[in-house]
Image (tube, rainbow, N blue to C red):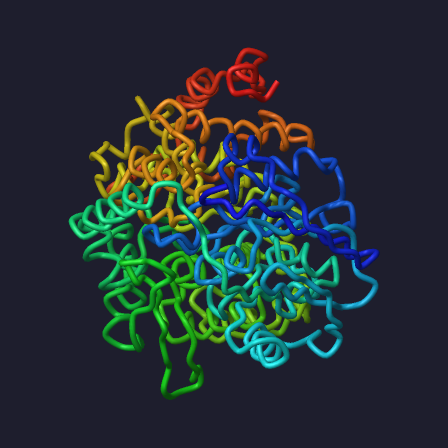
Length: 600
């Protein structure tokens, strides 16, 4: 095979057995890799109704055919499993160097089954693998874990691990690789912890063969030139990182503030990418093959929040800043360091803390619940709550369950700003109507990277759309979702789509793998992956009733800013979306759709 290595490592944690299997070329062609291939294997091999934290759930580390090839931003891999936060399919994407190293070590993917009797870690080196004891690593932070494993294996090994949050099964715990890159959403780290698996370490010195070297090289040069010419990838992200969006989205009136009570934060500039760059930024940092270098190593040199690490990125700045009403950049940055070290998602954490703050604001929490002042804008509360959540101590034990369970426990489920129990990211859909449809229909719950409608509606890429209208948004959302599924499955970064599109991705896939991906074929591949995720969720018990938004977004108009007076007009878009998807009125793919996509 070309592009793909052609090998799978299957690990039974219960028995301790490991075996190598051949990758089915037909599955690889149809589902591409990473997110798509992992979903197909999970769908075929496990019962979607199984307990996400039980041994029947499987955990897959999956690369794409472009991962590690030298293609633009080709450092991506996916962790695929059933989510303990949502109960839906989870495919959490991460960059850095772990994914490419797994392929250099001889495998496209790892399938982890069962549960180890005691803590272990998996070490993979050039086609060989072994399980090692990890009791001495249990309780350690992610950076401590990586340093120790590299000392025990190879100084150049790449490590993906969990911190205490994963061990204690915080429902939004993530998997951290290369110390600061994260498969962060949907609780994939909690699944890893439930299996007593502390880490996966890989070391490889192999290479990846491509089918058409000259054609692939030409495709690489073409996409790099396009990235250098596009404003977002050539200037915005390299200069300020993802946090360049803080002032942009706030000016539009769609920067959710104080648990989505409004869409404008008067002091947003204090936590903006521009302020981060002028105060805390140490340097820029890139993943493998990436010209954008949007990573942001930072340092707080003095004061109560002193420390150094990486980030925060835009979503974390919003969740722990705007959503919680905190405009202290050093506190937000310190909380982000804690999220990385203890290993959990700052988006779900910040949104859950904001939910707790509104519950307290409304007098819905017992007075003796915590000594922390749960008030919007309290920087010290933010930092301490992050620590408590990662360790599941005090009120952190409640926050670790996510906002839906927290709000439901105290009688106000409507205050959870989530869909399918996953917290929304940093865009108020009342001001960006396409994002309303995207949030509601996302297969992994409230999510922005399953079809980034902010791109055309706010940034004007590939063309500018009116964010306040609903007409045409169903077709745009479907197209973006299908393209995202293809990109995530290929092994390159979603940010490349600010500069390139499906034809360029298809050209790289064709020259790398030797499989001719025509326009029709790449569109269908993305659509096939999206529909298979939908079928998994339907089997897990989800219905059309779950394709909705938090009541606030549907009923409470934004009180200020450009979108003042607007709500999310989901009902105007959803029926057309179902029709374009080839689903019936209950949101179920029809027999004709399944036949067309080879899903029958």
